[in-house]
Structures are given as structure tokens and as C-alpha cells.
Image (tube, rainbow, N blue to C red; front, top):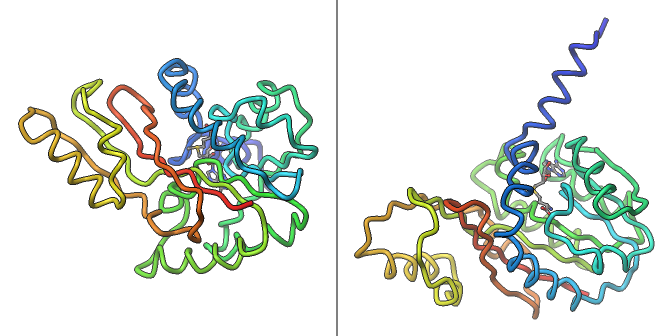
Length: 247
Ligand SMILES: C[S@@+](CC[C@H](N)C(=O)[O-])C[C@H]1O[C@@H](n2cnc3c(N)ncnc32)[C@H](O)[C@@H]1O
């Protein structure tokens, strides 16, 4: 018989997961002020997006820390997908909005499971809320990644309105608040170019950097609307975020 321990184990796994969970909530509260300029720029992009459908699936919604109420309030129905049981509670509390909570793991059988989103929510727009760069932490990937996922996304997204903001690169410094000229770095038009620009700025400094590629470059279909932003997640971790959408 499955006893209460079983549920405790499952919930703890969901609350402490490498793509978010309790540490993410703590960071979001603790570094709230540092995130504000990133959130403002991101929400300008979100408000400029004109989805054809006013029902939305927010995939990887967490507490909605990067979303502003003006954006969230324009939707009639919101489906919040996140296996972390704290996430939807915090989201509901922050926005005081009725949401449909969905804790299904669309990746339980691998990447293909994501295609079910369109079957489950045929009349919805989709917001990938800083999730696509976390896929290698959530699903076991093979050598065909990211090409295999690129094809799945192309099929899923060809006839719906969608928006995604996701990590391109994350940069982890050995010292806090590196004084870098971020606007010059994010002008780079590929990950390699971004890294070259970063290296140009750091070559004469005693600064160590660990760079993580999140395998999202070229992952989504080409769109006219695509920009790069810097998210200072903590004083030592900076993420280069891409925001892109289709109406
Ligand atoms: C980087 S956080 C998202 C940030 C958030 N959207 C915000 O506005 O601050 C990634 C989120 O993805 C969630 N996640 C992890 N596995 C998932 C899955 N299989 N399906 C949907 N969400 C998942 C995590 O629980 C976490 O809340």
C-alpha cells in the first residue's frame, strides 16, 4: 500500500526541481528589485504581442514573477502549467485571478509529449514562460537534441499564437556585479558572437565565468519579433534571454 511517505517524496521532488522550485521562489522574492528593469522590458514585448486568442496557456508559469498584471489581466481564461505545487498557489495569490491549474508533466514520456498541448487546449495561445531553456534539465536528451525538439515545436506552433522568453546563455561569475557593458554584449547576433563580445570585455579582468548554453539558439520558428534581454537572476548569475513571438 502507498503510504503518506510516498506523497511527501513526490511533492518534495516537485518542489525542489533543477528547473525551478523552492530556490527559484526564494530568489524571486530576494532579488525582486534587481529583476525590475528586465521585467519592464520583457512586459513591453508581451504587451506588444497581439495573440489571436484571448485564452492562454502559461507553460512553466511558476509564481508569474516576470509577468505584470496588465499582461495577465487581458486574458479571459488562463491555464497555468507547472508541476511545482507551490507555483500555481503563488501565481493565484499574486494576480488574484481565477486560473485553471494543470500539474501534468507533458514531458513524462519524452519531448513528443508536448504535442498534446494543442489537443488539450485547442483554442488557446501559448506562453512559454522561461521554460524552453530548462528542457535539458527536465528531460533526458540525446545527441539529436535540439534538432528533434525543433521539429516538435515547428509542428506544434505552426498555426497558433505563441510567445516564448527563454535562456540563450547563462553566465555564472566568481564575483558579484561584474561591471560589463551589457547593451554591447547583447547586440551579438549569435551565441558565438555574444561570447566573443563578452570575452573582449573581460580579457583584462580577473574574472572567471562559467558559461552555460541552454540549446535554444534557432530552436523556435523564425519570427519578425525577436529581441535579447539581460536578466540579472542573482548578483553572480546573469542570463541572456531571448523573447520571440508569433501572433
Ligand atoms: C525558470 S522557472 C520559470 C519562471 C517563471 N515563468 C517566472 O515568470 O518567473 C521554470 C519553471 O518551469 C517549471 N517546470 C519544471 N518542469 C516542468 C514541466 N515538465 N512542465 C511545465 N513546467 C515545468 C518549474 O517548476 C519552474 O517553475
